[in-house]
Structure formats: structure tokens, C-alpha cells
Image (tube, rainbow, N blue to C red; front, side, top):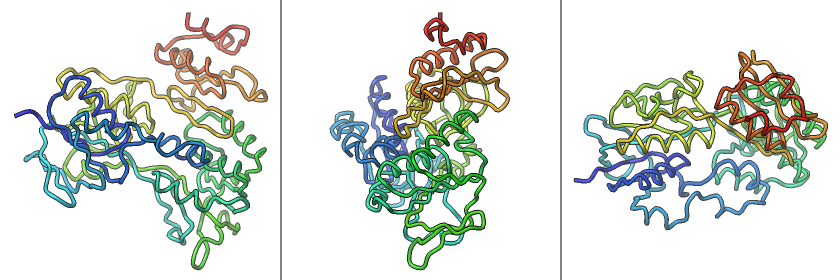
Length: 403
């Protein structure tokens, strides 16, 4: 009998796995299980162009409707796996019969971290994870409305930028002392704080949210001991790995499903890919990444291993964020102890920050600076040692850095 592969999670990693399995010649059955009513789609545009109304919904979908049928993939939407029975190699579903597998891929992604303060369940409190979330937010995004954004990370700031463009009165509440503190250098935090302030966004740093206030719906937010009027609250305080299925099934989990360099779990018949995994990164440390690059590349490597052609996964992670007319692109993973080298002047709204570790380029953050990002990514992958003064010298073209 031909092998059957079941994929739980119809997101970026799941869709990529279907494509890669067929490209690698897998001829058995494939079933892709998704909890949402939508086929696999891109999430990054949701908080950017889609929320702004400049990205049509059909463009979100990763593949045309015909792809899954033509690929011989059974696509089950509005379906939820309840349990994995490893001994029998069965996926128990919340409704309908269990699904047998020879090999299983977990691409379960993440879920939003919820506010737990009083008033968090009031109507008017929004999260942004899927298409339906954005559609609900768009319906109340009216010029003049007062929006309170809880969390000064990528999602919160991208929504704040869209809201400011659409004429909302925006206030961002961030418990830490700077924006995007977990993701970017202090130089980038300061630059983006200035840009948001110029757009009229009020920034409340070191200000934790204590309660959402209102009777029948949101009327205000209490933060730092002060009450601020609000009509809408958007919460962006991070995500949690969807590793519950794996954990209950007895697979190793630690803030994500633990996998090896071939995306395999501790069970020889089960792999995992994407935001839900903890793997050994290109620097040799265990990490969990939340980015499109990891979802795509890890799914490709899982597919290779599933068809018997394993290849170690050690790609350099990359990320991006669009806020206003600023394109932030990041390659590599920075550390607080890195030596910082700035190339270009932030006043020109085009510059880069390089992170050197033991003399080698470990990460790059580029704002409206594509050459610095592209060459910087190559330097990170190679662990290239570049003199700090050379990196900072704008008279030296970036392409010469890679020579």
C-alpha cells in the first residue's frame, strides 16, 4: 500500500510541505488538516497592507484553489485534531472518523497570548492572528476613533501605523522601556519611536495595562494608574506555540515541539515544522522562531526527510516589518552583548545597524536599505569578519564587503 502522510496545520508550513513532498516525488496520499475555514494563506500582510485595504483578500492565499486537488491532497478545513495515538498511528478528530498515517507532520503554528486583566473579555478588545480578526478590526477602524494598542512589538506597531494613516487617535502601551525591545537594537527602537511620534501616535513606555474599563463594551484602559479613554483595544503581546497535541502525545516540548536538524521529533514517524517548533538554529543553539522563512525552509527539510533524503536545516533566519513607508529587514539573531556598527544616518530614513560578535557579522537590521540587508544576510551566513570602520564607511559599496 502507498504511504499516507497527514499534515496537521494548514498554514505556511503545511502548504509548503504539500508542495515540497510532490516536488520530491512522493506519490502517496496527503491529507492537510486546518482549523480555519480558509485554505492556507499569508499572515504577514494582515497587519499591514490587508488591514490598510491595499491588499485584496484573494492575494492572501498561498495557492489557487485548484492546487490541492491537482496535487492529490485532501484538504480538510474547519477540522480540528483532538489527539495523536502514536502506537496506532492515528489522528483522532473532534468530529468524524480518525485518520490513519504512516508519517505525520505537525505544522500547528501559534496562538495569540491573551490579556488576563479585568475587562479583557469586553466587546471592543481585538487580537490579530487571522483573516477574520482583521475583517472585524476593519469594521471599527473609523477616522477619529480612539485606539489603544497593548504591546509595542511588530504587530502592535504595524497596526498603529495603519490606524494613524486612517485617521484614528492612537496610543501604544508598552511595559518595557523601548519599542520592539525583544526584536531590535536600541538604535532601531529610538528611530521607530520618533517616526511614530511624528505620525501622531502617543507612546506610553514602561506602562503596563491593569484593566480594560467599560460597561457593555470598551470605554477606556487603565495603565500605569491612569485611565485613558478608548473605543477600540488591539492586543499584541506575543504568541504561544501550539504544542499541546504533541505534549499530550508524549513528544518532547519546551516552548515548542523539539525537533532535530531534519525536523524530526522523538517519534520516528512524526516531524514538525514552523512556528510551533524548537530546533537547533544556525548558531548551534536551541531556538523557536516566528517567521515565514523558518516555516518555509523547515517544511522543505521535513519533506526531504520524509521521502528519505534528509538534509540538515541550518538557515539564517530573516524577518521584516512595514510601518509607514519604512521597510525594516533583519537577518540573523542579535544579542545584547554584540558590538554595534551603524551605517548611514537615520535622519535620511535609510540606514543599517550591524551586529558584530567576536569580530564576525552576526546580524543586520536595515531600514529602507536593501543592499545592506542582502549583502549583510550573506555576511551573516558566512560568519564573515569585517572591520567596523569599513562597515560604517558609506564610500565603500556593500557589494565590496562580500568580495
